[in-house]
Amino acid sequence: MADASPAMETPDGIASAISDTCTEKATLGTGNMIGLGVLAGAYIGFGSLIAALLGAGAADLPYGLAQIAAGIGFSLGLILVILAGAELFTGNTLMTLPLARGRIGIGQLARAWCVVWIANFIGALSLVALALAAGVHLAGDGAVATSAIDIAAGKAAKPALGILASGILANVLVCLAVWMAAGAKSAVDKVAVIVPPVAAFVALGLEHSIANMSLLPLGLLAQMTTGAALPAGLSWGAAGINLLWSTLGNIIGGGALGLVYWAVYLRGK
Image (tube, rainbow, N blue to C red):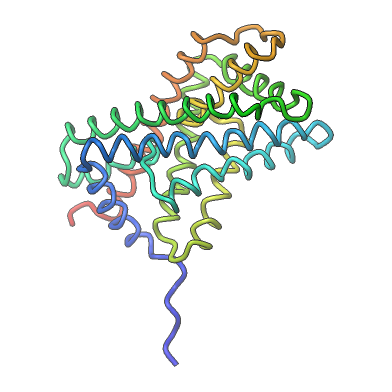
């Protein structure tokens, strides 16, 4: 009887698959890139809503367990991106791999990153607006709104260097989830490898720029619509600073990971 095929592709096979996929992503038409980018921003926004919801009900749980629960809930966002198909800026930082192989140019990489980042932002804001219109933040007698405000305030309070370092670590974990999902052979296996690294980055309080595109506006707008007290340091300006440094950190983390795997598995091929 023939041996069953392995549940995971080999690491060098994953590197080749990621190179091919990122090359295709970098050469997508602009319309498709925008459409899929908007979807990804919204999908990650769904994860943000679940994380805020779980945070609202975690007052009686130990800190670590509460954070892990929020992380598992948030992983819904990346599961939707990978399985349903969408363009996520942070995952696309792995385009440094085909760039190093000469399969795409720096102009194609910059175009893809910029277009998808903007599209993710549009999708995230649209999702937040719909959620607020639906009254999602009012659940639990406003407990979800309080949770969202607390999350946003914690992110706004971080210094620039902390956000940068946190963004690097966050996207290493997110890109590892994308990397392993590319090697998994079934939908169940893909979900199984996505959840742990995503749950880890959320539980550790790390900074993911696309998640913050929904988490920060959610907290700020929930505060405005409910009239809750505005935490010190939480403002739209602070949210913009967070997005700037978390985006840069995400580029460094994901881009460096792609280059390391290129050097190990694909250099010279």
